[in-house]
Length: 116
Image 1 (cartoon, helix red, strand yellow):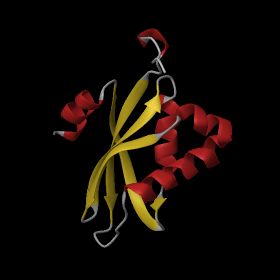
Image 2 (cartoon, rainbow, N blue to C red; image 1 turned 45 degrees about the horizontal axis):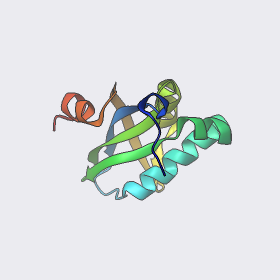
Image 3 (cartoon, rainbow, N blue to C red; image 1 turned 90 degrees about the vertical axis):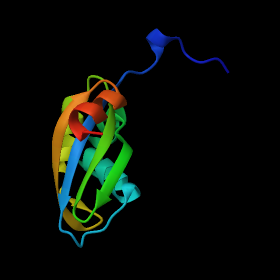
Image 4 (cartoon, rainbow, N blue to C red; image 1 turned 60 degrees about the vertical axis):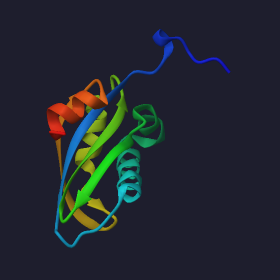
């Protein structure tokens, strides 16, 4: 099967998200992804959350501090920010999330906002 031409491929934006929680809170990428999907679905419904298509790409969390990169379709950055802001618990444990910035590539997102 042939791939789509470049002008027809979907465009993405990458949100750098900082995670803060209690040191004894322990959750993984799968739990964060699931709760992010539920938050987007509760906020925008099935059609709106599918349009944003939020996906967790990189996830690092340990001892109550972490960071992640969330991918969203271009043009839905505001919806993605609101869905991340609506997320207050992951795996039943309270968390604080902060959007550090939005970028057009994963590499720029890591270099500018995650200091990798």
